[in-house]
Image (tube, rainbow, N blue to C red):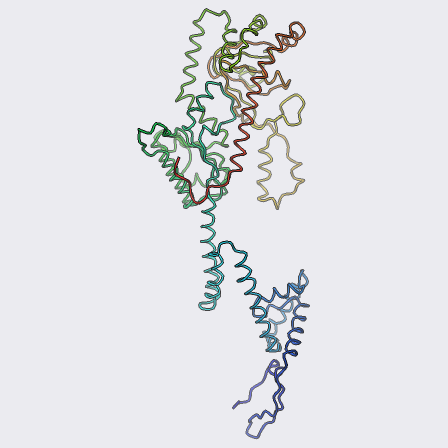
Length: 566
């Protein structure tokens, strides 16, 4: 060089110079020695050993070296602390110590780091990635980092990752399950006539179960599907289903939604309001309910508002029950028909007490022949009359009416609904139904935010509390017997029996049945056969409902979008 300059340790390590200076300051190299490959490898080994003992240095110009260090055993917290201390040391010396690393070792580290990066981020990632479109992000980001810069490449990576996530999330499907009232029923027990009519007209109830996070893209597909329910159809096609009267959208599996999705649901409510279809958004969490109400989607008492048709039931079960009740009341007009039946029975003088008529209806609606065999029970029965809204076993204040005997109640005419505590269960109890409030457990768990923050011992502190909210479990009319399950199982039912219309029942006390077991066992045997048949049908309906729920949970999600073909 024409001017004198200082040399770094790395330069001196790579070359041995015998230097002479002339009077003019010129430098003359008398000898020059190049290290062999084995010596270079030795330098590299020493550097790796030092880096491994320290846990690796952040001054290495590529984080890919950490892969090599991990392979040679630099694991645990101690190497990480060592690398931090070494980095502090380099920082305090303004990274002048980097100059003491031999240049050939530095180059070798870069080569090893690049090989590790190529192997892990290009070769192995290509082999592990099923969608090769996702893998293309790696070379794109690498090229972008060299051409534009590291920070713009990071920003581009975030943008591309967001687009890929949204596209993948959209393809995973937001619709978990689609059905009608024909295939999905509520667990509420009903008369044979009502159940058969609901089976024949189940298409008037449309059911959708949604899942995942809702945003404009996937929520709009739901709106498009709902629009197909009200498309004008060719009248020549007699098998085309009618416009639905009730739309149930279960959102218990939805994790969240944005404002654009709220607008989509507002459009769905508007569409249903114009076609006189009531909307049930069931299973909303407290957060989603808050988001909905902030967006203006909430029930309204104003009959002129489109949100007057909107209801927010807590579960899909309650929504199904209300939808079925609505069809029976406003479409079938079952209550009006039953009132007509009540008037006809009051005017009839063929039977003095109607007990034989109640048995005949049981034969007709259950397909059995038991009336003539049980008519001998007439002298042991008493007539019980209930006005609309009156309870069978409870007073107006909700207390138990102990004056009325327990037994079998044969319904001559009228409709009874049976309600029970929403969280009542007979698990591990001897002879009564015990109320366990599972909502308490749900509230306790939701307070922790995630399972990671939950301790198992906290569950033992949950206390049992009586919940005053009741759920209806049955709706019975003529041709049915109240108390059959209690009589067979010997379990005291905590249900509340309320008359929907004026009712006339015939009571056969359990005490009388116990006495007749000794006096006339053949007659009691025929009675038990009838009770077993009715109870078995109730259990069959329960099993079918459980099968439906299992189908909903195990059904794979609909991919891409909702199929608009019905």
